[in-house]
Length: 249
Image (cartoon, rainbow, N blue to C red; front, side, top):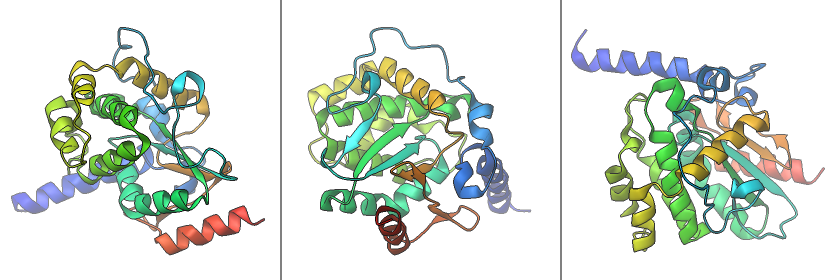
């Protein structure tokens, strides 16, 4: 076997592992996703300092990142881990659709984040990426949405590659979002200003009862957004149909 096929085989084995350690129980038809139990609360010791919540957050201790009109009749709840490849599948396939429907007022999005893959795979990329996402939402919900899309689009090919553990990488990717690299954003990413907040966001995930990521719900009802073996998302049209059916009951 040549080097390229060997690398592909390794990625395949890792992805099969993460199929049970990362993808949502609802999407995969499992009684419980193993990712939560596998990762547990192990992601490194709690960060020092006060848990300063970024601006534009909501929920207990500011652990929820909303996008869309506060008065929307429906809520799309989304749980993601920045290192989760299946979360990237959902974001790449449906992220722009989420935003478009929120902009239309179909629903308000509430983002929740987990960081269990730092514990499952080793490293600190989930929490440092979440710190950077906190710095982005502090600049505004639109900046957060754009930066989240960039991060998921540029996940490392190998799941065990802790690329997002580098603040330099996170800042370089921020260059792809116009106007994001303000002095406040740069400082928060470099100094890990929102790392204590990221710990609280992660703790909120464990308390939520969700067993893995990604999870997508409309008004509390799970939506199956991964197709087949989880290597792709459902189409934007199918997602829109699911939302319409769920919200017109």
